[in-house]
Image (cartoon, rainbow, N blue to C red; front, side, top):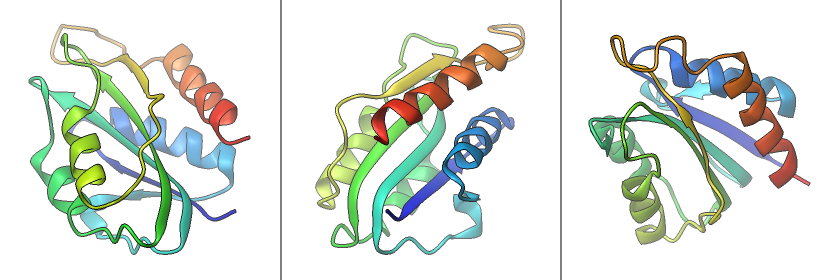
Length: 137
């Protein structure tokens, strides 16, 4: 099975989550700012934060470059310190480009200044790894 883990991060939180799940899956976590080549992927894990209730425009722009013909399924993992925890914009872009997105998402507490300090923490990261283990089988 060909698996890829990509992420976008502003403060490093999503990178920590992406690296933990990539280690579990035996792959390398790839920062979308390095423009990774995504092709012939059975499972694509997309890790990012929700910033001010929205997905990062940089992530959405990158996702618009993906080819729906080469990705069989995507899973979304997000962190947020606000009320918006689901990556609806990411889901919409992927769906528009013909990439099936699993209904089940992983979300955890994020941090911004003094809100949600120390999140995502070890437990959040372990929960992300457990989520990936449960959906990868």
